[in-house]
Amino acid sequence: MVDLQNVTLRVEHLGKTFGNHEVLKDIDFCVQKGEVISVIGASGSGKSTLLRCINMLETPTSGHVFYHGKVIENKPKEISLYRANVGMVFQSFNLFANMKVLKNCMVGAEKVRKKSESEAKQLAMTFLKKVGMGAYINARPHQLSGGQKQRVAIARALAMEPDVLLFDEPTSALDPEMVGEVLEVIKQLANEGLTMVIVTHEMAFARDVSTRVVFMDKGVIEEEGSPEQIFGHPKSERTKAFLSRFT
Ligand code: ADP
Ligand code: MG
Image (cartoon, rainbow, N blue to C red; front, side, top):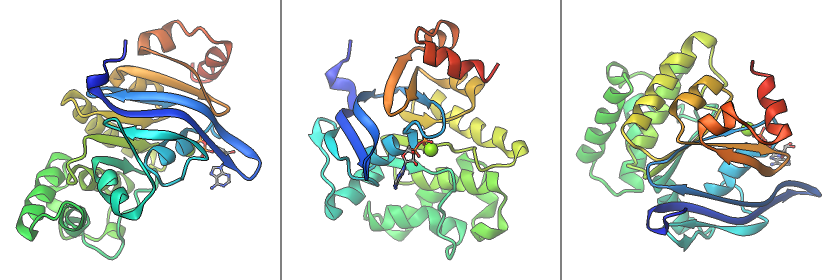
């Protein structure tokens, strides 16, 4: 049963078409407060497009996104505040190359949340320390490893004090030895109760941290359930076929 009081994000009849390619088909999906949802599925199944529509980086072709029951419209004024509340962490980090680590984590709080410089600095420091990057505040992004860049990107999103964080394959661009340090940070956030939607190919991680797993296939949610249901007892033949690649 969905408890409407606790619904943070809801997607209704969401469709996205590029040219004549229907990438998302009538998706209904909801995120309740405190959930950690892993989205899994083959490359090209529409996972990134779903996150990008939720974050309004893409305008849905049909359907709506609701945040605390209010429909989100793709208007510049509303959208930057919405994106502070519903943050996103990308595969490719997307740090501001011309800003030091500290400033990367301050600008959103200053510009969007209208914090003073000292408040923004305090927030940035708090979250940089949390992700283990407190010693790198004066570094430039190009001086950091991939794992360090991604931890800064997570701190930057957290400094906006979001109530949901969306992650699009946060470890896919990393060298294998750096995957663990980033997953560890995300796991810590999960344990603290942050609401998150994580697109990932790290199946052991998804099984470990998720409260719910969503399997996408060819633009639809083919199956969803608890990690135990999806990984232990998948119903759909497509889910079974997908998961068999990881064993
Ligand atoms: P996933 O993240 O699951 O790998 P995507 O959401 O990135 O899948 O892509 C789903 C499909 O949509 C792919 O076939 C991809 O080529 C297509 N697609 C994604 N973005 C665009 C775009 N901006 N223009 C055209 N096609 C796109
Ligand atoms: Mg993707």
